[in-house]
Image 1 (cartoon, rainbow, N blue to C red):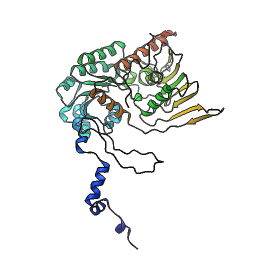
Image 2 (image 1 turned 90 degrees about the horizontal axis):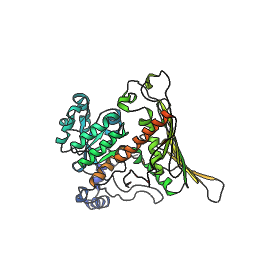
Image 3 (image 1 turned 45 degrees about the vertical axis):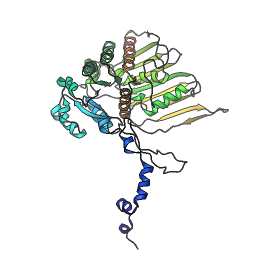
Image 4 (image 1 turned 60 degrees about the vertical axis):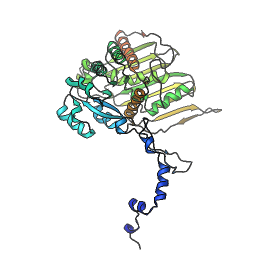
Length: 424
C-alpha cells in the first residue's frame, strides 16, 4: 500500500509539474496588469469562480493601495482603544498606513509600538513636540484618540500643522470647542471627520437602508440602550474635567446618534432624567446613568437609556407601522446581529428574518472613508458638523435633566442635514 507521504502532492511539486502555458493561463485568469495595480486607485485581482451558482462567493482579492500611495496617519494617544482596536485595524485598511505616533511615553511605550508597526523611531513624538508633525512629510492626517477635553486643542494644532483630522467621539466637551475645531480645519483647508464608526459598520448601514426604504412603513419610534459597568474610579472617563460627563458622552452618544442616523431627522425637543448611586466613588463627578427621550419633526420619537453601572447592553430597535428592525448587539467593535419583522402579505402572521452580512473592521472602514474623502476632495459622511450637533443635543439633555422640563431645539429641515454622502 502506498505510504501517505509518497502520495501527498506538494504545492511546489504541482507547480514544477505544470506547464508554463498552463501557469500563464492561470495568471491571466487571476490577475490584472502590473500597471493597473500601481495606479492611483485601489485595485483587486479577479479570480475565476470556484463554487456553484447556488453559493455566494467573492471573486476578487481585496483592492489595496501600495504602501507608498497610502494616506499616512499619525495616531495621537496610545491608550486602550488605540492599542487594541485602531492600530491593528491598519492591517485591514485598503488605503491608510500608520506613519507616526504621539504619546506621553515615547521612549518606552512609543518605541515598542513603533517597532511593532514599522514606524520610524524619529516619527514618535511626545505631546510637547506635537507641532513637529508639520515636518513629517509622510503624515497626511492624524487620528486623535485622547481624553475628550483635549480633542479641540490637538485638532486645532493638527490643522495648523497642515494635517487632516480624524477625531474620536464625542467631538469635544462644549459647543464652542466644536465650532473652534470646525473653523480651524476650514481655515487650513483640511478635512475634519469624527469617528462615528457605527455609520460605517455594515449592519447599521443596512438597518438605515431598510428604515429609509419604507419596508417598515412609517417610522414611529426607536428604543435604545448602551451601558457598561465601569471599574477604577481613577480612570479619566470618570473625571469631568477630562471627559465632560459620564455615561452620556461616552456610550449614550451611540443611542443619540443612532436615532439621528436611522431617521435622518434632527430632534426638536428633548427630556432627560439622570441618576448616580449615592456615595459611589466612581460617580463623584459624573452621572452614572441617564434616561432620555427625543422628539422629531415627523412625529418619530426615541427613548434611550445609558449607564456606567449596568451590565453590558448595546442594542436598539426601530419600529414602524409595518414592521420593526433591531440590532442586538448594535454598538460593539464586532459581532452585530440583526432581526427584521414584517407582517406577511395576505396573512395575520409575520415573518422574522435574520440577515447575515460580511463582517468588516469598523475602524478600517472609517479610515478608508477618510482617505477616499481626502483623495476626492469631498465631505465625509461624519464631518465636524455631525459631531457638533451631538454635543449641542447632549448639552440640551443635561439642561433637561437639571431642570426636569422639556428643552426645545431649533428645527432643522431636510434629512442628513449635517452629513456628507454615504459612499459604497
